[in-house]
Amino acid sequence: MTLACVYGGLGGLLAVVALFEMLQNWGSIEVQEALRSGLEPLGADPDALLPTIRWVVMALLVGAIAATVFSFYAAKGHQASRIGLSVLAGLGAVTFLSTGVAGLLPAILGSLIVYLLWSAPARQWFAVVNGRTPLSLGTTPSVTGPAPHRADPSGPVAQPPAYDPAQHAQPGQAQAHALPVAGPVGRPRPVSLALWIAGLGSLFGALGSGLVLLALVALRDEVTKTYRENELLQNQLESAGMTAGQMVTLGTWLFGGWLVVSLLGLAATAWAATGQRFGWWALVVVSVVTAGFAALGLPVGLLWILGAIIVIVQMSRPESKAWFDRA
Image (cartoon, rainbow, N blue to C red; front, side):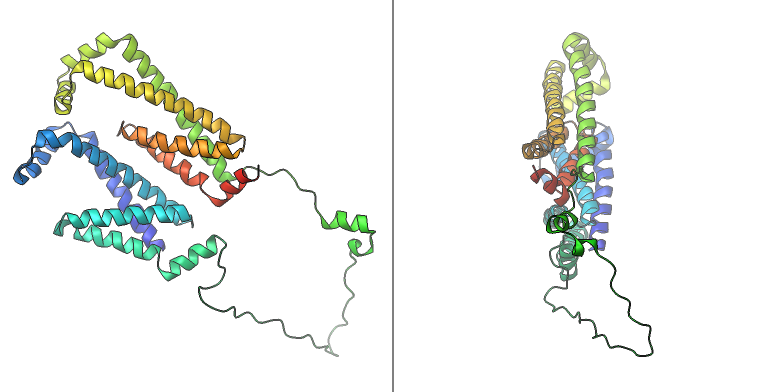
């Protein structure tokens, strides 16, 4: 099981680095020529497929980030992360296998990860960690009772049992000794971590998107002029098939949407901090929306995707759910 998490974590981390570098250099001549040289022998139109391939690469980057996070938490016994890692490894194995001989080794690795995660020792370990099956699967407890005590004449004299005040107290006093006073239920550490990450991510997202949105609205003409005069930005516009005005309009809508999502994240974080059950749902749903919206802004949105996945994993832990269910 540990080997599966190591394979999944290292594979996901290496994929994140490679895909992030590809997206960062997407507008470079080297990347464009490499993609064109791979598409032209297949009879495909590179200009028509390049935008689609970019979306595919961004989706793969999100999956690689999720696999890395799931591997970390699956190694701690988190069931949802185990399922998520299995799904991603299975999809990766099928995808690599469809590419032919070049993807045979990664496909075998993905299949091995799924097998190791669901083997009999792994199932037993996850059951024990989650408190469901404390013994080996299918075995009978081999615990024997203590041997009967036999008095040893040569041994020390047995001492009387210690004095227990509860045995000599009145019925009301005995009940007071037997039932401890329940103290306040503290917030679990996973919930606190999720609230900190969600709150800070939403705060920085709101500040950053608000400033950019203000600049795009107030300085629209200057930004459009910069796109037209900068050669690198102009090449990016041509590869995307957009004009400078269309790009500024798209950026205005995207950063406006990101501002709304960030404000919703702040509200959901405050709601979840109260411990109400609907606050749990609000924070999880907003985290999913945040991860999807951040994927549109890759590679800048990489940190928000990672943070959203961590929040979802932390909120899905048993102690987190139990804390919200208490209300």
